[in-house]
Amino acid sequence: MRNLFRFLKSKSFLIQLGLALVVLVILIFVMLRWLNGTTNHGEFVEVPDFAKMSVMDMRKSVEEAGLRYEVLDSANYNPDYPRFSIIEQNPEAGNKVKENRKIYFTVNPSGYKKVTVPKIIQVTQRNATSMLRAVGLDVQRVTYINELGKDMVYTIKYKGKMIKPGDKLPKTSKVELVCGNGNITSRAQIKSDSE
Image 1: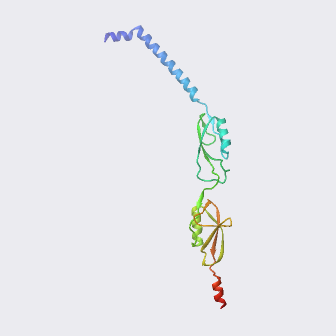
Image 2 (image 1 turned 90 degrees about the horizontal axis):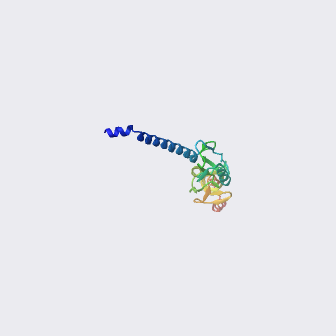
């Protein structure tokens, strides 16, 4: 035990301890300088506003800003933005981020997704309108033909052409319902009236 205390008080131990502390301080200093250089400590890039930019223009701007990007799918078409343009970004414009940070983009699709026309033949106009709205279609107008079922849907038209249940239309499309007016003026009835 005395030898240990004598060694701890010796000049050689104190020199070795001093050298170890100097090496430790130098290592910490070098490590901090290296971390500052590699992590760009204190250096930030302001995220540009990419809203309504085309994907090609966005790629150019991202590279110029020293950032990376990832494009996410978009489920809903937004008519306020051009087709294939940026509708959302994360982080948002104006945020300060480190260089080489990844920005996530949501792109506006080319148009509304298609929806299936429901089975509305032989359904009342009121119910048919509700069923169409439920899938994202609108009734632009209702026309009437001479058929016995008053306000009963007999045919559906889109842009003047007949369509049938099961056909696909872009969401928010406007259709025309052809309904019965409650009158039947068939040839058989005209013939019986004339007799």
